[in-house]
Amino acid sequence: MRTPRPRERSFARLARLATAVLCASFAFPGAQEEGGLTLDGIAFVRCPGGTFAMGSNGGAPDESPEHPVQIRGFYMARHEVTFGQYDRFCEETGRAKTSAGGLIHGDWAKMGDAEIDLEGGWPRGDRPAINVSWHDAEAFCAWLSGKTGRTVRLPTEAEWEYACRGGASSRETWAVDLVAWHSGNANYQTHAVMSKAPNALGLYDMLGNVWEWCGDWYDPDDYSRSDGRDPRGPAEGRLRAVRGGSWVNEPRFCTATNRRGCDPAYKGGGLGFRVVVSPEASPGAARAAAHGR
Image (cartoon, rainbow, N blue to C red; front, top):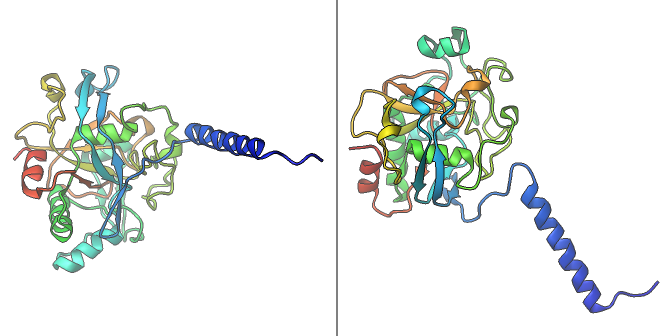
């Protein structure tokens, strides 16, 4: 057998490398962006800035009109805040731990066609923290900001949808069963984070498992007034925005564009949160701007 010449070996190595890169670029659900961040054990994924089409002209009235939105880069937590992470916050601050049980009721029950008693609760650990109000989530952000010196906050609706879609170059093209726990596959309970496939940015559980608080006030007509430049939502309101759907919802509610408004004091078994980190170094100003205060 003829021994390959050095040039032939180099060409073969390049060919194998090119094939690997090509395969990786088409692998579901896409390669994670490099340059992530870890703060106090919480992993964040870099979400590069860009422009995307926010909303939908074919969904609920509060999802329209679809409109172009420009987003600055930010970091988003790889998954929803877990009980393990939230419990540590409670232990360090002397705050009462939230229950892993509870009752899904009212509008939440109507969306799932059931009223579900969680009785004694589920395991904690790697499952998303539930029964957390918007105010509780804000307190968690303030605690983590103080510990790390970075601006940790809840995402805006625009940031959340941008990240859920996978950034500027991606759309909702995946099958919901692959990425989300919903009423059709969750067996009436939450599940450990990262037990479904990630999206194109490497983010897990953006859809299903639990709804996620956003920093914005909720306004069903806000899109018609948006100027599209890194929007932060209305300056005031009564309800806070939640996104993503949960284990109690049908798949049709687990979409990147579906919006809901919720009393910021509400705590429920289908509602949690995830956090983002601003690239800015001034915690106070960025947090106030993000939450319309």
